[in-house]
Length: 496
Image (cartoon, rainbow, N blue to C red; front, top):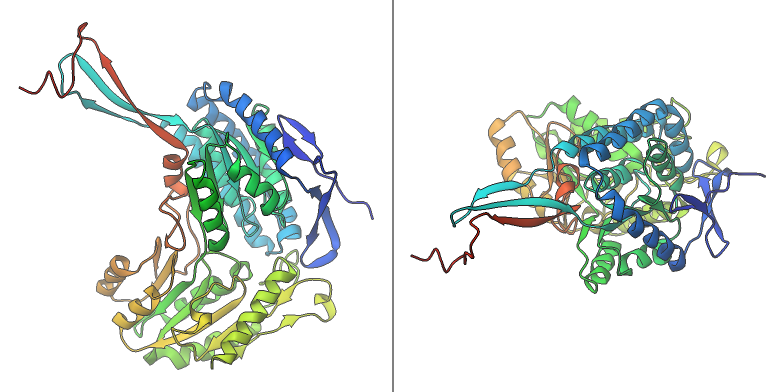
């Protein structure tokens, strides 16, 4: 069967991997549907891309920032025009339902317009000098060539969070798309190329993390790395980058809790829990993987939640009636199965789902039932380790203070949610929950591009995407202009 062949984008040219090898991109809902063949690249391909990016940086950094921003605006308009096509492509390669892939493309559109605005907001500071006839200010400078390593669950939105602020800041980029979902990154970059981005400013090198990602991290001419993925891989990235003193932005795992108090709007909390737990088939770093229930509403919530989870329609995301798509690959299915088994072995109860779907319309894909596990205690592995699938744990608690303690008791700290009508407890939770994101009366998913995105503890290393991305993709330069026409020695001549 014929299928499209894709190449790396290096210096404005589409080049096959030097190995000559490719990786097939399969539709997780139907493995007979081959989305395309993408390069299986190695360090030599990365080296070529870095050379191209370094060459392009010499001229790109000199383009006025508002002019760089105009390219992002045009790219955003092209993404709007192509939204349906790109959403369809994304569902084929990633699996999540069309409503969600449209949202993924929309997030890239939003990021394009937001980042474009930064072209006129790359502000520095002016400040009085301690000496007469001397002017002092600070300015933002681009970093240089940056390496971007992106995940498969948001294959257009997350690359846009990295590419667009990096570009408007004056950097050039080498991006490694996720092996499972490269086409969406290609589509995003194609919009930039069609919008007039000069050759070499963005380069795509497709391949595995061990080959392409590692080479990017270790290349001496790559000045910074922005990584989104698992905490385990992120730790390796940070350690390898440290050898060449590269700054690294890490956005990693989560084990996010939705707390439901006795006074909550129960219908709203149920809707939020279903969306947070099973949206994107649970394959979000912000997915609701723990639901903490105050004992007064626990039985009622559990019965209704289980009933609704059992009613969710699982299938091919191209079918507009489907609510939960496939998991992205067989490895993710195995992880979901493993954690269900671990939970049951530790004494938890399977209340819904728990099995891979392999018969009939599911036979040629990687599907897993929406799964609810009850009787979970905070010390169980299912309550502490990231599953990254449609598997959610129910944990009961007595007091509000106990709920905060349970929510904070894990190694991750990305997103949290509290459902309550008590404004005092809402603000206490905002203060006390250890997370980069807290929602009140809303699910743990749903970040917006103009707010900081990232987490604490094993979720991140202090950098933020969203409105914090410019801080990572620029460096500060202090500037002093002495117009006294004489030598002035700071801290010496002004000592008296």
